[in-house]
Length: 243
Ligand code: NAP
Image (cartoon, rainbow, N blue to C red; front, top):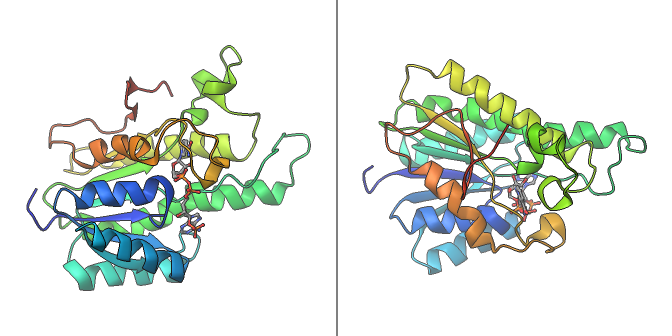
């Protein structure tokens, strides 16, 4: 891709998203820092620029139609096209989340952000992505969304706690990723899901064992796939994750 390659990372003000922005910026790309909180967004853009990244702020709440439409307009005005979209923003909805005790509103909120938000942002950015020679879409998922793992031997390290909103939201996201890949067949758009591993971030009270930089690596790899790279897959650093 050219030096003018442009990426948008949602939820890029902290955690893994920030490191994805930093990693893509280190390739010489222009990186849109999608984030809803103005203060944290401005701080992230400042830090990225201080690190030499061509970063620009993109006000973005993935649950809000008007915000997402405005974000697409901003990216279009900034660069005229988009090469890579990393759908990274997500929430857990808070734990514990046992199915028998959950507030249904929690499930709705998590799905609205982690699944519908991805569809909303992807579809808003698609006209810009279609102008790219090598469009890539990366959906940050999690191995806790793997039905194979959830239905196997109980191993909380691989499956996370019993959680009826967060884990199934990633299963849903994986299924959505596959449907996009099917629709994109015959086009140059590659779309994949990635799992960063268990990373120390706000999302899990910093209990994760990997660094955000390590967690960002899979997204960077999927964002920089060659034209004959895979699509409709689910990958972690170690290789394919079972669905
Ligand atoms: P994080 O530190 O909590 O960051 C999440 C980001 O998403 C924040 O920037 C947050 O912005 C943003 N966000 C949440 N809701 C949003 C909305 N409605 N609109 C726009 N932005 C929103 O989490 P993380 O650990 O870096 O997670 C990044 C991705 O990796 C997520 O998709 C997560 O599910 C996935 N993942 C993480 C782990 C892990 O161990 N950490 C494991 C597997 C998968 P605010 O600052 O405004 O809240």
